[in-house]
Amino acid sequence: MAAYHTRSISFPSSQHPLIPEFDEQLCRLRSSEAASSSSTSLSSKVSGLQDLHDCVDKLLLLPLNQQALSKQPNEEWVDELLDGSLRLLDMCNTAKDALQQTKESTQELQSIIRRRRGGESSLSCEVKKFLNIRKAVKKALHEAMENKCTFSLLNQDQEIVSMLREVQSITLAVFESMFSFISGPKSNSWSLVSKLMNSKKASCENVNKSNEFVNVDAALNSLLISNKSKKSDSMLEENAQNELQKLEMCIQDLEEGVESLYRRLLKTRVSLLNILSH
Image 1: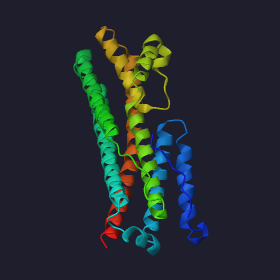
Image 2: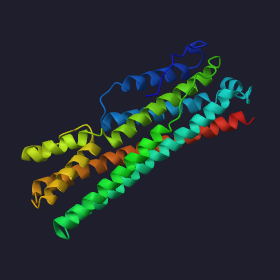
Image 3: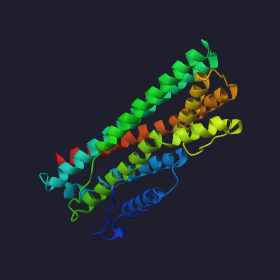
Image 4: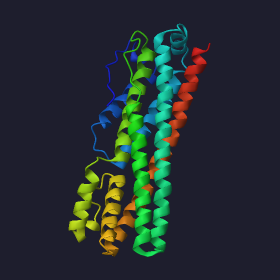
C-alpha cells in the first residue's frame, strides 16, 4: 500500500478556500482505506478521487502555485511528478482493459447459458474460456502492481508539490484496492466453491456479498466441477447466471468511474506540462 506523509500547511488555510477543501477530501479518502472492500466502497473511493483531482486542477490555476512549479523546471521533483502522473495513467488504462475484457466475456457467457446450445460439454468449454480470461486479467493486474510507481519525499518546501505528491499516493492506493478487488484473494474462490458444492442452499445465496468477481469465479468453478462429474445441476447453473448478471452491473459502475477518473488524470498531467513549459 502506498505510504502517506503528513503535510504541514506553510500558509494559512484561510488564504484560499480550496486549501481546506483539498484537506477535507484527502482526509475522507484516507479514512475510506480502512473501510470494508466491496464494489460500493470501491466506487465511492473512485468518486472521491474524481472530486480530489477536480480540486487539484483548480489549485493549479492559482498564480502562486503556477509560479512555485515553474520557477525551477530542472529540479528532480519535476521529473518525479511527471513520471508519477504518467504511471497513474498507465494503471488507469490497465484497470479499463481489465474491466472491458471481463465485461465482454461476462456478456458472452450469459448469452451462451441462456441459449444452452450443445449441452454440458459445450458449456464447460465456454466456462473454461471465461476462467482463462480471468486468469489473464489477474496476471496483467499482478504485473502492473509489480511495476507500480513509488513516490519519494519530494521538495517539502513547496506546498503545491507536497500536495500533488499526496494526491498521486492516494490515487495509487485506490488502484491497488481496485486491482486486488478484481483479482480476488487466491484461496477465496475455492473456499466458496466448497461451500457451493456442499450445500444446495448456499448455491442460491450470495456467499460473498462483498465481491462480485470472486462470486462469479466460485459459481463457475462449481458449475464446471458439476459438469465434469456428469451431474447437471440447474440450481448451480441458475446461480452462475445470477452472479454473472451482478458482475456485469458491478463492472458497468466501475467502468464509468474509471473512465471519468482517467479524464481527470489526463487533465492534471496536461496542466502540469503546460505550467512547467513556461
